[in-house]
Length: 96
Image (cartoon, rainbow, N blue to C red):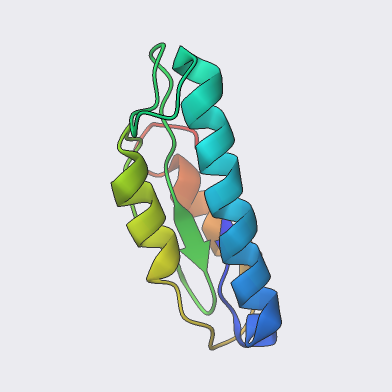
């Protein structure tokens, strides 16, 4: 769950993106012993972001490129509605 509300504008959003992409990279290597662009061992990551509303930026997937692209596409703006983010994470029967 990533905050893309207006308070994240500037360096806060840039740092969030760096941290999220580092996390994805760590999971990529930890799940199959190499940074090969695929999350392994049956693990998956999904991206949900929120501001005024929450959106599911990706489903639970294994593609590092797709996850990083979703992170890179985030822009800051709007209010902070974290409750919507938690609801979105459970809306499709998967818990992110």
